[in-house]
Image 1 (cartoon, chains in turn purple, green):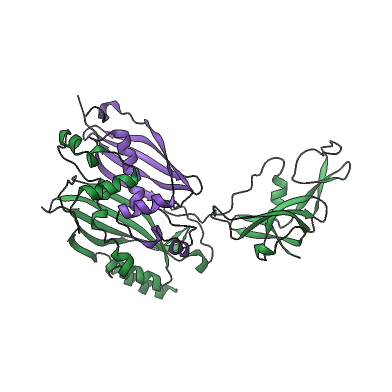
Image 2: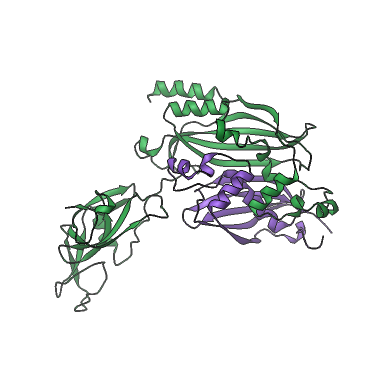
Length: 143
Length: 322
């Protein structure tokens, strides 16, 4: 179990920053993640349909953005953390050719529950804010 | 829509609040390792709680769990949506009511999920959903519209709550269908993209200010009368810092040009041709060539420019075939 460490609630401080993550947005990623989240809406795999909605190409589905939010939070916390909530505001679409940079910071701690708030922003290099929100994690407390 | 029509429309859409979108239904598949693995591979999530049975058995939980973010995925219909379309329900009917009244635009704006219980391999996720609320009419950056919110409630095969999901959608009249919507200070407002603002500094603000007035000026050295553009403090010929300006007639010719294809940037109209234009007065200016197919643009092409309002914030010279 030593290869996977989970952060203890007591060692986390408000203001701690998470290591940024860059995600290359490709058609393969958009299609694979859409299907892996069981989202078969044509705008996420059919370029012609996506273009008919006024966008240049297929774009990332919302369930995938949510998935990247929680992944980013638990990559930081370690696997014993329990995800309690996800609150996400959606911005500009992610389309192939972009790079989304995900950053995060601890913005609150609740001693009673051991829950920390991780504020997360995903910005793509062309259109800016793609997703912005908070993932709440319950971390192990005490020794 | 007049006041009376709007009242009737709102009575209609608000009648959907509380309507059931779907009754409590089990997902087609119980929570299982292959679907979790497909998700973990695509998302690049190496959390062993989702994928390493041995680690999971030794963990505090004592078992593998499904990624919480998959909660809604279990109940998704899958490929039949593509093949047959969605089965009509209260939500699709509500969307249809909006579309019928010109609110064609659809934008998912917020998702909020709460998780009460982690689900393990073999559990079945049940979902039920209602139309929870519809906002009053709002002026957003995308256009006039309404936010509606669905509330999905998830439970397992024992009826134990797993979590909830609130999904907020903006239905709006697309900008092409209405006069430019005024931006609002409502923090839910989405801004209509405009062109990148011109940088106005000490040495060039006067030029842009004149452009806002519909004029393209060319800087002129007061000492030797040499014209120069773009604006700068000193004459390159005689080093005088005394200057005034003349107004360009905006007659010009293409010296060089390019067509921008990708990435398409919001706020810019495509096709988009940018050209270096030699003005009749002798200085060069970079501007868009419009009013013809990009294929028609060529070096030496004669142009006539005029200053036009490009978007809510931007005045720019645009050049047309002469």
